[in-house]
Length: 216
Image 1 (cartoon, rainbow, N blue to C red):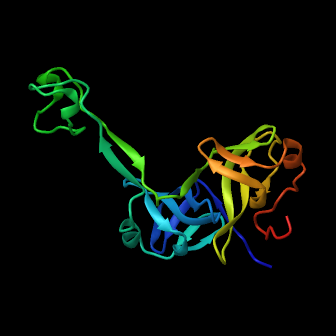
Image 2: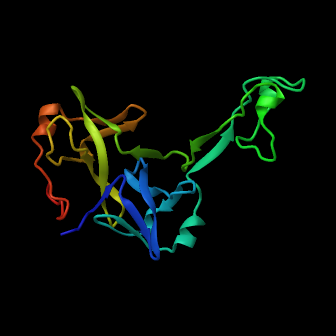
Image 3: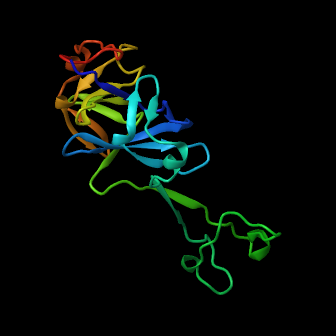
C-alpha cells in the first residue's frame, strides 16, 4: 500500500538545519498532473522554487533534503519590476522615469516635484507551461462553486497528484473531502473545474490524512 504525501498549503517548511519558511503554493505540470516545484516563502527573502525531488517528507510540516544556505541558492519564485513614475519630472515624461522605492541621505520625491516614488511590483516566476495552485483557489462542480483548495495529495513514487483537498468551512461543514484527480477536468484562471456535481462531491467519503488514501 502506497503511503501518499499530503501537501497542505501554508504549513512550515524545514531544511536539515532549521525552519526556512512556509509553503506558499504548489507548481504543477497540468498536462502530466504532476507537481514539479513547491514555492517556499522565507521571512525576509523572495520565495524560492524548490524542486519536488528535494522533499523528504510532508506530514505535519515539510522537510527538505538541503541546508538553509542551499535553499537560499535556489531560483527565486518572484521577480520585481518597477512601474513608471506617476508624474513626469526634469523634462521627462512619466513613462521614461523609473525610481527606487526607498531614499537615503535626505533625498525624497516630495522635494523634487511633489510626486511619489514607484513601488516594485512582484510577478510570479515559474517554468513555462506550468501552473500554480494556492490555498483558497476556487473549486467548481458542474453545477456551481463547491469550495476552495486546502492542498494536494501526491504519489511519492512519481509526484503525480492523486487528490485535491478541500479547505475546512466549505459547503459541507468541516468534513475532510479529498477529490480524486481523475474528477478534475481543468486548472485555469477561474480555479479548479470538476466533472462532478455538488451532490457527488458531498457523497465522497471522508479521509484520514494519516493513512493511505488508496481506494478512495
